[in-house]
Image (cartoon, rainbow, N blue to C red):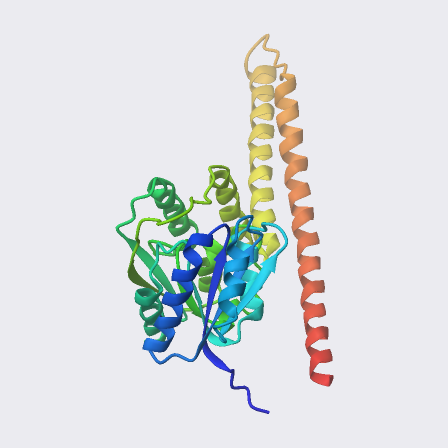
Amino acid sequence: MSDKRPYRVSVVLPAFNEEPNIPTLLEKTSRALAANGMEGEIILVDDGSTDGTGQAADEAAKTCPNLRVFHHRRNLGLTRALMTGFEHAQGDVIVFLCSDLQSDPEEDIPKLVAELDRGADVALGWRQGRSDGRVVVSKLYHWLSRLLFGITAHDMNWIKAFRREVVEGMKLRSDWHRYIAVLAAAEGYRIAEVKTNCYPRRHGASKFGRRRILAGFFDLLAIKFQTSFIDRPMLFFGSLGLALLFVSFLIGGYGVTRYVIEEYLVPGGEYKPRNVTYFAFIASLFGGLALFALGFLGEILVTIREELKELARDLRRRG
């Protein structure tokens, strides 16, 4: 049985309340595929829109045979909309574009796919001419990403293209779409950037909220743990535990030294450690031991997980 897929390119378009943009978006995407000789499909995911986005897409699908539309009953967020698109994509290459027309499909699809043809596994669009109010926040996130992951990309939260194997099996949680490049790089995939124009929004409003800033910071920490320590929990918990045990050693050493000096070397001295010293010593000592215990438990869970994976592989081979 042939493994050849019916399409080379799947263009995934998540949309939430983008009704005025839908006709132009689909027309431009179709022209981009046809003009570049790409056998492709268009997957539009209506993420619980409350306007006519879903109806406009369904109407377009009647005359566009390579367009498929999927609907969420309520707004689940961009990450879940992308996952829905990825699950149904049939192409060897997946292109993610925004539905607000700040990116131009006719310009960007050939640029991104060409970068994959040159050997990249993930091609990231790098916005040129960006003028929104989130530039400072974006620079902070990318600085942290470089610090934590060594990723030198300038714009990870924008349009992108990747080979389908990059996202097969990738588990994305809320708002983790912006870190697809980080997760891909952790698996050894090659990341490249392509300069793309960023145009002013024609219709509708941005869906970005300030509450996402703090959530994004914690997502960075969660992904750092997943990519660096998920298979080596003792490295994380053991390092913290060792640091706390060292602190308890310093506190205990300080208390013993003060006692010896004032009890035996200073006539009439009487050292009475404060309650805070006792508390700090006990807290750091038992805290360090508890973290070591968590590390050991984590190692046991990792071993069980690997055994379950091996069992699942055996069952698939036999089946």
